[in-house]
Image (cartoon, rainbow, N blue to C red; front, side):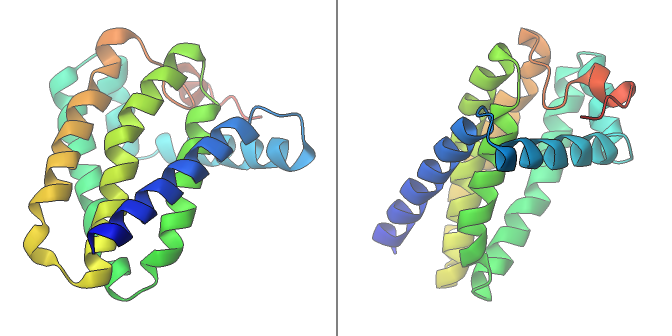
Length: 178
């Protein structure tokens, strides 16, 4: 199981890095992916419950941001575990880090650096949840729970360092589609 998790995390980080670099190219497929992700995020982040997170982020409320990340991503961890359990999650080991890498790669310089640091906990934690589900190893629930809390601590700190997110607060507010 440990070898599987290690290989899954390495694959995830390869895909994250590839997508991060890919969206920075001028290839037609990269531009199309960027447009789809950007516009989809503007729509998603403009509606509750995600708009509540954007409001907390705009108001630089670390505590509210922390709890929103914790709650939203807790649902993600449960979903990844269940998807892993029914073996569909193996596809998510490919899709989730690729999409996350593409999103982080679209950010401004500060947001990209911050996003990579955040992804250390988020991507790795989601892959561990999925892998544990694949093996039905619920007794190790505490490992992704640690990643979840660390992710919330780090991701919420974006309000303190001025990271904008992807898309940023102004882009969501003003519906700045690509």
